[in-house]
Image: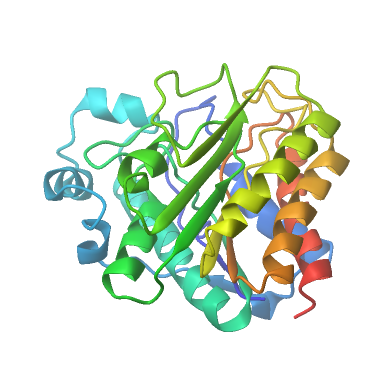
Length: 299
Protein backbone atom coordinates (compact mmCIF):
# COMPACT_ATOMS: atom_id res chain seq x y z
CA UNK A 1 0.00 0.00 0.00
CA UNK A 2 1.49 3.34 -1.03
CA UNK A 3 1.19 6.00 1.68
CA UNK A 4 2.54 9.52 1.23
CA UNK A 5 3.95 11.84 3.89
CA UNK A 6 5.08 15.46 4.20
CA UNK A 7 6.40 15.64 7.76
CA UNK A 8 9.95 15.95 6.45
CA UNK A 9 8.99 19.56 5.71
CA UNK A 10 8.71 21.22 9.12
CA UNK A 11 7.36 24.70 9.79
CA UNK A 12 7.92 26.96 12.81
CA UNK A 13 5.28 27.40 15.52
CA UNK A 14 5.35 29.54 18.65
CA UNK A 15 5.94 27.72 21.95
CA UNK A 16 2.71 26.23 23.29
CA UNK A 17 0.83 26.55 19.98
CA UNK A 18 -2.23 24.29 19.94
CA UNK A 19 -1.71 22.86 16.44
CA UNK A 20 -0.31 19.34 16.99
CA UNK A 21 2.39 19.42 14.34
CA UNK A 22 4.30 16.64 16.07
CA UNK A 23 1.59 14.07 15.34
CA UNK A 24 2.59 13.59 11.70
CA UNK A 25 6.11 12.35 12.38
CA UNK A 26 4.84 10.40 15.40
CA UNK A 27 2.32 8.64 13.19
CA UNK A 28 4.91 7.65 10.61
CA UNK A 29 7.11 6.32 13.40
CA UNK A 30 4.16 4.42 14.91
CA UNK A 31 3.31 2.79 11.59
CA UNK A 32 6.86 1.50 11.24
CA UNK A 33 7.31 0.44 14.86
CA UNK A 34 4.08 -1.54 14.83
CA UNK A 35 4.99 -3.12 11.46
CA UNK A 36 1.76 -1.84 9.96
CA UNK A 37 3.65 -0.35 7.03
CA UNK A 38 7.15 -0.98 5.70
CA UNK A 39 9.66 1.70 4.73
CA UNK A 40 9.10 0.98 1.04
CA UNK A 41 5.40 1.80 1.43
CA UNK A 42 6.05 5.28 2.84
CA UNK A 43 6.83 7.80 0.11
CA UNK A 44 7.63 11.53 0.38
CA UNK A 45 4.87 13.56 -1.25
CA UNK A 46 5.65 15.95 -4.10
CA UNK A 47 4.32 19.48 -4.41
CA UNK A 48 1.04 20.03 -6.22
CA UNK A 49 1.26 22.21 -9.34
CA UNK A 50 -0.01 25.80 -8.87
CA UNK A 51 -2.43 25.54 -11.79
CA UNK A 52 -4.14 22.62 -10.08
CA UNK A 53 -4.51 24.48 -6.76
CA UNK A 54 -6.33 27.33 -8.49
CA UNK A 55 -9.04 25.01 -9.74
CA UNK A 56 -10.44 25.31 -6.20
CA UNK A 57 -8.86 28.53 -4.90
CA UNK A 58 -8.81 32.03 -6.31
CA UNK A 59 -5.60 33.21 -7.92
CA UNK A 60 -5.48 36.16 -5.52
CA UNK A 61 -5.67 33.94 -2.44
CA UNK A 62 -3.15 31.48 -3.81
CA UNK A 63 -0.69 34.28 -4.67
CA UNK A 64 -1.06 35.85 -1.22
CA UNK A 65 -0.19 32.54 0.44
CA UNK A 66 2.67 31.89 -1.94
CA UNK A 67 4.42 35.25 -1.48
CA UNK A 68 3.41 35.94 2.12
CA UNK A 69 1.39 39.06 1.32
CA UNK A 70 -1.70 37.61 3.02
CA UNK A 71 -2.91 39.86 5.84
CA UNK A 72 -2.60 39.02 9.52
CA UNK A 73 -6.35 38.66 10.04
CA UNK A 74 -6.56 36.00 7.32
CA UNK A 75 -3.66 34.09 8.84
CA UNK A 76 -5.34 34.25 12.25
CA UNK A 77 -8.35 32.53 10.65
CA UNK A 78 -6.04 29.76 9.51
CA UNK A 79 -4.53 29.62 12.98
CA UNK A 80 -0.92 28.95 11.91
CA UNK A 81 1.68 31.69 11.34
CA UNK A 82 2.77 32.22 7.73
CA UNK A 83 6.22 30.98 6.80
CA UNK A 84 7.87 29.76 3.59
CA UNK A 85 8.04 26.32 5.21
CA UNK A 86 4.26 26.32 5.78
CA UNK A 87 3.75 27.06 2.07
CA UNK A 88 5.99 24.17 1.03
CA UNK A 89 4.34 21.84 3.54
CA UNK A 90 0.84 22.79 2.35
CA UNK A 91 1.70 22.23 -1.32
CA UNK A 92 3.29 18.90 -0.45
CA UNK A 93 0.29 17.79 1.60
CA UNK A 94 -2.09 18.47 -1.28
CA UNK A 95 0.32 16.70 -3.61
CA UNK A 96 0.20 13.67 -1.33
CA UNK A 97 -3.58 13.52 -1.66
CA UNK A 98 -3.34 13.63 -5.44
CA UNK A 99 -0.70 10.88 -5.46
CA UNK A 100 -2.75 8.74 -3.05
CA UNK A 101 -5.81 9.13 -5.26
CA UNK A 102 -3.85 8.09 -8.33
CA UNK A 103 -2.50 5.01 -6.59
CA UNK A 104 -5.90 4.11 -5.13
CA UNK A 105 -7.37 4.07 -8.61
CA UNK A 106 -4.69 1.60 -9.73
CA UNK A 107 -4.32 -0.52 -6.59
CA UNK A 108 -7.65 -0.18 -4.77
CA UNK A 109 -6.35 1.75 -1.75
CA UNK A 110 -3.66 4.29 -0.83
CA UNK A 111 -3.18 6.97 1.78
CA UNK A 112 -1.80 10.37 2.68
CA UNK A 113 -0.43 11.07 6.18
CA UNK A 114 -1.78 14.58 5.84
CA UNK A 115 -4.59 16.26 3.97
CA UNK A 116 -8.23 16.34 4.94
CA UNK A 117 -7.98 20.13 5.12
CA UNK A 118 -11.72 20.51 4.72
CA UNK A 119 -12.28 24.02 6.11
CA UNK A 120 -10.37 25.94 3.41
CA UNK A 121 -12.62 28.00 1.11
CA UNK A 122 -11.99 29.38 -2.36
CA UNK A 123 -10.60 32.69 -1.12
CA UNK A 124 -9.52 31.94 2.44
CA UNK A 125 -8.07 29.34 4.71
CA UNK A 126 -9.58 28.47 8.08
CA UNK A 127 -9.25 26.10 10.99
CA UNK A 128 -5.63 24.97 10.39
CA UNK A 129 -6.44 24.48 6.66
CA UNK A 130 -4.49 26.45 4.04
CA UNK A 131 -5.61 24.68 0.84
CA UNK A 132 -8.53 22.26 0.45
CA UNK A 133 -6.83 19.12 -0.83
CA UNK A 134 -9.95 17.05 -1.56
CA UNK A 135 -11.66 19.86 -3.46
CA UNK A 136 -8.51 20.48 -5.49
CA UNK A 137 -8.04 16.82 -6.39
CA UNK A 138 -11.74 16.29 -7.11
CA UNK A 139 -12.00 19.27 -9.46
CA UNK A 140 -8.78 18.30 -11.22
CA UNK A 141 -9.97 14.75 -11.79
CA UNK A 142 -13.39 15.81 -13.00
CA UNK A 143 -11.93 18.43 -15.34
CA UNK A 144 -9.63 15.81 -16.85
CA UNK A 145 -12.39 13.17 -16.95
CA UNK A 146 -10.35 10.70 -14.92
CA UNK A 147 -13.55 9.73 -13.10
CA UNK A 148 -17.16 10.84 -13.41
CA UNK A 149 -18.33 10.47 -9.81
CA UNK A 150 -16.53 11.08 -6.52
CA UNK A 151 -17.71 10.65 -2.93
CA UNK A 152 -16.16 12.13 0.21
CA UNK A 153 -16.79 10.37 3.51
CA UNK A 154 -15.75 12.97 6.08
CA UNK A 155 -15.67 11.59 9.63
CA UNK A 156 -13.61 14.35 11.18
CA UNK A 157 -15.51 15.64 14.23
CA UNK A 158 -15.81 19.08 12.58
CA UNK A 159 -18.20 19.65 9.69
CA UNK A 160 -16.57 19.78 6.25
CA UNK A 161 -17.79 23.26 5.36
CA UNK A 162 -15.04 23.92 2.81
CA UNK A 163 -15.74 20.67 0.99
CA UNK A 164 -19.43 21.56 0.89
CA UNK A 165 -18.78 25.12 -0.30
CA UNK A 166 -16.38 24.11 -3.08
CA UNK A 167 -18.05 20.86 -4.18
CA UNK A 168 -21.59 20.81 -2.80
CA UNK A 169 -23.26 22.10 -5.96
CA UNK A 170 -21.30 19.78 -8.24
CA UNK A 171 -23.60 16.94 -9.37
CA UNK A 172 -20.58 14.67 -9.80
CA UNK A 173 -19.55 14.81 -6.12
CA UNK A 174 -21.33 13.41 -3.06
CA UNK A 175 -20.16 15.11 0.14
CA UNK A 176 -21.00 13.28 3.37
CA UNK A 177 -19.99 14.76 6.71
CA UNK A 178 -20.76 13.28 10.15
CA UNK A 179 -19.67 15.54 12.96
CA UNK A 180 -20.41 17.12 16.33
CA UNK A 181 -23.55 19.25 16.24
CA UNK A 182 -22.17 21.96 18.54
CA UNK A 183 -18.60 22.01 17.32
CA UNK A 184 -16.65 24.20 14.88
CA UNK A 185 -17.52 25.57 12.34
CA UNK A 186 -20.46 27.46 13.78
CA UNK A 187 -21.71 28.59 10.36
CA UNK A 188 -22.40 25.47 8.31
CA UNK A 189 -22.45 25.01 4.55
CA UNK A 190 -24.78 22.10 3.71
CA UNK A 191 -23.16 18.93 2.40
CA UNK A 192 -25.01 16.41 0.25
CA UNK A 193 -25.55 14.56 3.53
CA UNK A 194 -24.85 15.97 6.99
CA UNK A 195 -25.30 14.10 10.26
CA UNK A 196 -25.09 16.16 13.45
CA UNK A 197 -24.18 14.22 16.58
CA UNK A 198 -24.87 15.46 20.12
CA UNK A 199 -22.06 16.06 22.58
CA UNK A 200 -21.05 12.88 24.35
CA UNK A 201 -22.08 10.50 21.54
CA UNK A 202 -20.59 7.06 22.22
CA UNK A 203 -19.65 4.08 20.06
CA UNK A 204 -23.03 2.43 19.64
CA UNK A 205 -24.92 5.55 18.57
CA UNK A 206 -22.09 6.70 16.33
CA UNK A 207 -21.73 3.40 14.52
CA UNK A 208 -25.49 3.04 14.05
CA UNK A 209 -25.64 6.48 12.40
CA UNK A 210 -22.73 5.60 10.12
CA UNK A 211 -24.25 2.26 9.12
CA UNK A 212 -27.48 4.02 8.18
CA UNK A 213 -25.66 6.65 6.11
CA UNK A 214 -23.24 4.51 4.09
CA UNK A 215 -25.90 3.02 1.76
CA UNK A 216 -26.79 6.55 0.62
CA UNK A 217 -23.17 7.20 -0.31
CA UNK A 218 -22.85 3.89 -2.12
CA UNK A 219 -26.12 4.47 -4.00
CA UNK A 220 -24.41 7.44 -5.68
CA UNK A 221 -22.11 4.86 -7.36
CA UNK A 222 -18.84 6.78 -6.93
CA UNK A 223 -15.80 5.67 -8.89
CA UNK A 224 -13.53 6.65 -6.00
CA UNK A 225 -14.10 7.48 -2.34
CA UNK A 226 -11.98 9.90 -0.35
CA UNK A 227 -12.08 8.82 3.27
CA UNK A 228 -11.30 11.70 5.61
CA UNK A 229 -10.46 9.62 8.67
CA UNK A 230 -10.12 12.25 11.38
CA UNK A 231 -9.62 10.74 14.83
CA UNK A 232 -10.92 13.71 16.83
CA UNK A 233 -14.17 11.86 17.74
CA UNK A 234 -11.93 10.02 20.23
CA UNK A 235 -13.00 10.54 23.86
CA UNK A 236 -9.52 11.81 24.79
CA UNK A 237 -9.57 14.52 22.11
CA UNK A 238 -9.51 18.02 23.58
CA UNK A 239 -11.46 19.56 20.66
CA UNK A 240 -13.82 16.70 19.85
CA UNK A 241 -16.70 16.66 22.42
CA UNK A 242 -17.66 13.10 21.42
CA UNK A 243 -16.86 9.97 23.42
CA UNK A 244 -15.67 7.27 21.01
CA UNK A 245 -13.32 4.60 22.28
CA UNK A 246 -10.30 3.39 20.36
CA UNK A 247 -12.29 0.23 19.59
CA UNK A 248 -15.18 2.33 18.32
CA UNK A 249 -12.86 4.17 15.95
CA UNK A 250 -11.53 0.84 14.68
CA UNK A 251 -15.07 -0.35 13.98
CA UNK A 252 -15.80 2.94 12.21
CA UNK A 253 -12.78 2.43 9.95
CA UNK A 254 -13.82 -1.16 9.32
CA UNK A 255 -17.34 -0.14 8.26
CA UNK A 256 -16.06 2.44 5.77
CA UNK A 257 -13.18 0.46 4.31
CA UNK A 258 -15.08 -2.82 4.14
CA UNK A 259 -17.88 -1.03 2.27
CA UNK A 260 -15.33 0.28 -0.24
CA UNK A 261 -13.73 -3.14 -0.69
CA UNK A 262 -17.04 -5.03 -0.91
CA UNK A 263 -18.32 -2.64 -3.57
CA UNK A 264 -14.98 -2.54 -5.44
CA UNK A 265 -14.66 1.22 -5.04
CA UNK A 266 -11.10 2.55 -4.81
CA UNK A 267 -10.46 4.51 -1.61
CA UNK A 268 -7.87 7.13 -0.72
CA UNK A 269 -7.42 7.78 3.00
CA UNK A 270 -6.51 11.27 4.19
CA UNK A 271 -5.77 12.27 7.74
CA UNK A 272 -7.99 15.05 9.08
CA UNK A 273 -7.95 16.16 12.69
CA UNK A 274 -6.79 14.73 15.99
CA UNK A 275 -5.94 16.74 19.10
CA UNK A 276 -5.69 14.31 22.02
CA UNK A 277 -3.60 14.91 25.09
CA UNK A 278 -1.11 13.33 25.08
CA UNK A 279 -0.77 13.51 21.30
CA UNK A 280 0.45 9.90 21.24
CA UNK A 281 -3.21 8.85 21.57
CA UNK A 282 -3.91 10.60 18.28
CA UNK A 283 -0.93 8.99 16.54
CA UNK A 284 -2.04 5.55 17.71
CA UNK A 285 -5.60 6.17 16.52
CA UNK A 286 -4.41 7.23 13.06
CA UNK A 287 -2.10 4.20 12.92
CA UNK A 288 -5.04 1.99 13.82
CA UNK A 289 -6.85 3.20 10.69
CA UNK A 290 -4.01 1.76 8.61
CA UNK A 291 -3.96 -1.44 10.63
CA UNK A 292 -7.64 -1.91 9.75
CA UNK A 293 -6.90 -1.03 6.13
CA UNK A 294 -4.18 -3.67 5.98
CA UNK A 295 -6.55 -6.29 7.36
CA UNK A 296 -9.15 -5.52 4.71
CA UNK A 297 -6.69 -4.88 1.86
CA UNK A 298 -3.77 -7.32 2.32
CA UNK A 299 -1.60 -5.73 -0.38
